[in-house]
Amino acid sequence: MGFLAVFVCYIDRVNISVAAIAMQDQFGWSDTTKGVVLSSFFIGYILTLAAAGWAANRFGTKRVLGFAVVWWSLFTIITPLAAYASFPLLIAARIALGLGEAATFPAGYGILSKWFPPVERSRAIALLMSGIPIGTLFALMTTGWIVTNYGWPAAFYGFGMLGFVWAAAWYLLIHESPAEHPGISDAERQLIAAGAPQTVERKPVPWGQFIRLGAFWALIVNHFCSNWVLYIFLAWLPSYFRDVQGLSISGAGIYSAAPWLTMFLMTNVSAWIADTMLKKGISTTAVRKIMQSIGLLGTAVFLLLVRDVSSATVAVVYMSAALGLAAFTIPGFGTNHLDIAPKYADVLVGITNTFGTIPGIVGVALTGWIVDRTGSFDSVFVVVAVTNIIGTIVWLTFSSGRKLVD
Image 1: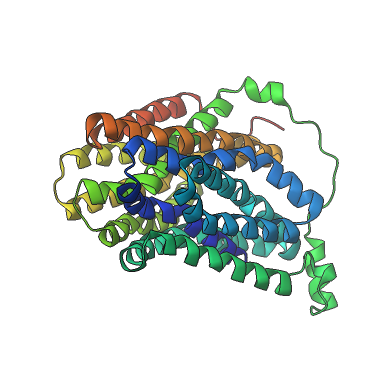
Image 2: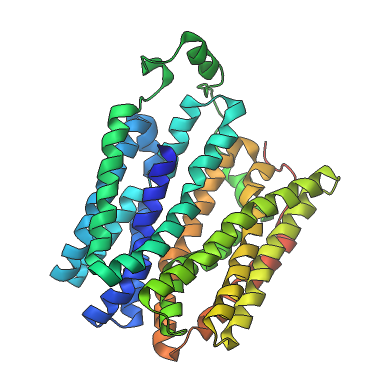
């Protein structure tokens, strides 16, 4: 059920990147205006990231996640109505959608910690997180077909209803904890309880120590830089294939899905490479620096190359290579929180993820403005490449794989 929540979450987040092509044609938006629409989701998302974790602890993960899915599904369905009513209402609906989706992972992780013993949590979290690429792929591959055959509002109505179906099953089938479930044995309950998180006193977060660490700032900068390319791809790739490569809306959606499939596959490959390097005795610091550099610089190279491509087939190969190499940032900066401050990794993730959401607001909106001013995506790809190069320099200079905070 957690996987399905993430699956629906990403469908409702991504479908507008394809639907916005038809919406732009109908409402006469400029690319700058479309960029504002695509970025507005992240305003709501960043506002409730911290509050979502607190709410899950305070009111229970079952209630919070169930409410969140109903909330964002409602605003998914409202999106076409808001768009027809006025532009400000459309922006408000997208912000409201982001407010709800921010609870997905805090609540999802919370309920997994109650239901799975430590030896099973890695697989449980992997299954939960697999909803991201699969939901993205599903949305990109189907939204274009729905828009072409039934109109763009149908994509929001149909996908919005999925959330209500999920919520009904969630409330009927899921219990907050093993202690509340009448159908599991005492042995199972004791096994899970033995590994459940215990309430322990933890020292205050050493903010001063973090602020003085170059590795802390390297993490923030690299979460920001790594997410810049991901959010540009997520929001603008369908528009690129439609406007630059001349594909149909359905074709643009399908071509946009290929890079995400590549990233999904390369995520496992990059993790295996990093683990193999560590087992061979290469230092954690070296592995993190190498992986992150491959991810950022490799992506930059292929985005610079794609500027001179006139074939959709060649473009999708380059885009797939770019996003496939971006997967190397996961065993780069993505796991570094646990390296430098394992006791405060959750706090670090919250901080860097907040900065990592800024590209969803600034980068996505800026892309529309650049395309309007220049008439192409070439400068967009240059901006991403420069951002990645800056991130690499900062990472190679300041990052560390050693434990720096106890």
